[in-house]
Length: 347
Length: 75
Image (cartoon, rainbow over all chains, first blue to last red):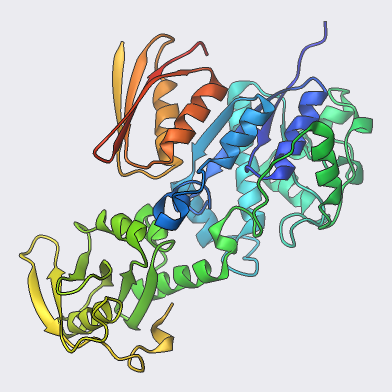
């Protein structure tokens, strides 16, 4: 009896990785999935924050894909290691702060380490030539294979016929004839294959599944670095960029203003770490203050908090200010007028 | 053996990752009680258990905390 070969599949939760894994299962390969959490993933927690999203069913698409496939899924926390990928991408950024090519190389390299440790024979991805402008091009496919160290052990079942044969094909572990030659941004071949496999429902995130491809998010990230004077970040920082209105009235401090109850509750979780304030005379948002504000800055912040409260038309609004480890105190302020809140402060 | 894991204040998928890493150290038949605050775990941890061969014996929700009792399956 021939030995059953094992492949580890990069599972993002999207359609392409689902199909790539399915193609391998159809060829009798033992497949297990691997999914990486960078901290910038659009999955899961982002849905849990906003109240308006609470009614929608929440699910982790990578877990869901694995369940459809009937394979195991290993989720790997790469938040710390990913910092170097984001801060020093050898191949640069895409349209926003997305280091897509370095990211793909890094993930394939981590999958290779995992495969070697667990005795797996090769790695598969759902990459399709021409699908993504930065990382999935004919000229970058060999770069990923080479720089990750995976070399010929990296197989892309959906576009393999457009590439040179890899080790699993040459060794006859998989049949090249039963692989695919998809290319370009047209999704129809994938949708047809999904129908053939009986997948009726699947996630199709427009900008991929990463916040770094999002313009507004990238702008807030760059602002955070500029405000701090360095590019270090912690998990809490990158989470907070996903929540609320971010307003920077001056280089040395910014406000994060909740937009609704879900965000309010989420920001409450940070009240021990940040200066925070909320209106007490009228219902209003939770406001975190990040940076090094002077006392006069806090008065401006209080006026902004009042501006976003139900008392925005009132003459005076009471705002309670909390500094970590100190007794809270109240100030009475005039809400900031609509023309006083400057567009350039909005990040 | 019974074990416990505090995954409060973590947002998905972190509670799943912590559960996965803890379960990896346990033996079949052991139980792990995971306490979380992100409502996403109600879907994600059972899904993770189903695909990896573990069982959720019990799910309790009280005062904003969700507790899942997991029985570790065969590797």
